[in-house]
Length: 153
Image 1 (cartoon, one colour):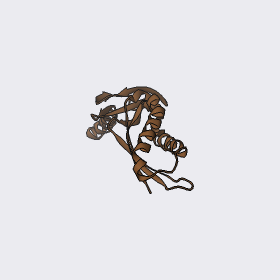
Image 2 (cartoon, one colour):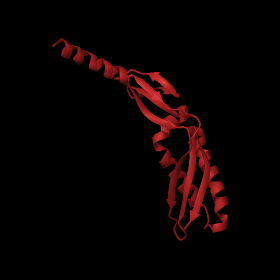
Image 3 (tube, helix red, strand yellow):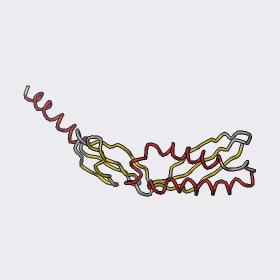
C-alpha cells in the first residue's frame, strides 16, 4: 500500500519536472509564450520553463528553408520556382513566422505580375529581380531570401 501511494505521489512530480526542461537543438530558436504573449526566445541549449504556464509557440530553424511556388500568368507561360530563405533575426521573425509562406507567395505574385513574358534566357535576371523584391519585404521582418530559382513552363 505504501509503495502504491509513493508511486502516485512521485509519478506526477516526475512528469512535471520532465515537462519543465526544454532542450533546443543547435541551429534552432524556440519562442516561449506565457498566457498567449511572447516571453522570450530560447537559444540552443537546455532551459527550465514553467510547465503549465509556458509553451513553445514556434520552433524557428535558423538554417536555410525552401518554398516552391507556381504563378500562372494570363496570356503567358506559367512561372514555377523555388525560393530559398532563412531567418536572420528570430526576435523580429517570430511575430510573422507562421505567415512566411504566404508573404513569399504574395510577394512573388506581385513582383511577377508586372513582368513581361519571360524567355528561358531571361530567367536568371527575373530571379534576381524577384529576390530583391522579396528581400525588400522580408528584411524588416528579420528574414532574407538567399536564392531564387525559376523555371518557365
